[in-house]
Image 1 (cartoon, rainbow, N blue to C red):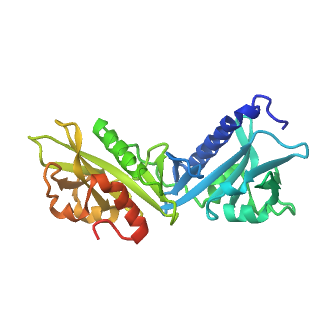
Image 2 (image 1 turned 180 degrees about the horizontal axis):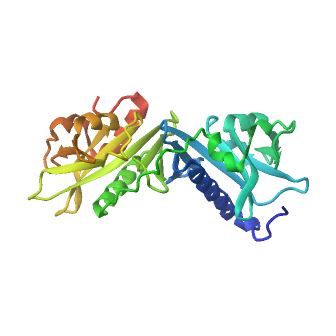
Image 3 (image 1 turned 45 degrees about the horizontal axis):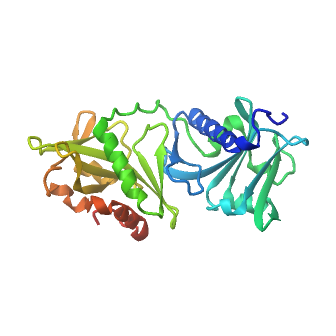
Length: 325
């Protein structure tokens, strides 16, 4: 295919976004929800993160899209060396051929891309280039990294789940306020990159990546509203969609309905602990707490000051400690 005349030099960023969303859509469609996509709230060199639900692994991804082939029938992908921030992150390079992805997609770890790419220095900046064709096999050094576009999800070892993914749980305005507050607090810590899932179909609602350790932690945010006549409150988790994992933490905020403000403290509870602390009520797992009181009963050891929430999450990465320990 010749270059698409609809995309000119000034629209490079827009065309790149088209490639990204086409790749995300294909990964979700092919995996039937087995791969869940998180998009960044702060750009630190990663276009998105795939969450493989079958084993809980998070995979950082950069996507490079091209809208046309070279006269030799190849896809040329050139990136600055400084834009490759994590050798373990995956690069997906693809041709966007009209409404579809190209027949073949290049999938390689950044470390492999850096090792195999052609290196050039222009005006003091180092550039890396990969060139691949739209067919399997051949003797090219990129051949082992080429995947048919219809098998892209298989490259990430995603298995199609036996049942359709659960429907999103309906959230009220207080829940959205809680999520926004957690994001705001975590955004104060420069070393933490934040991602939101699109669509929101799983336990993790805010994904955090530590720039130093390159580890991930997923947060589910619960907001417990209270007023003078309702000190006792419950936090509910739907059993069919709640997935406990070592990397997942439940963050509980207290919302004072009368004052329209958050309480001074929050709870950070490892999701595995939630399973033992909660009580089953039909399809729900229930945690009882008193958001209007300084006491959280058995949950008190998970308490942290809301003003220091970012520090508490950063400490999880730094010390490798679980909240409450």
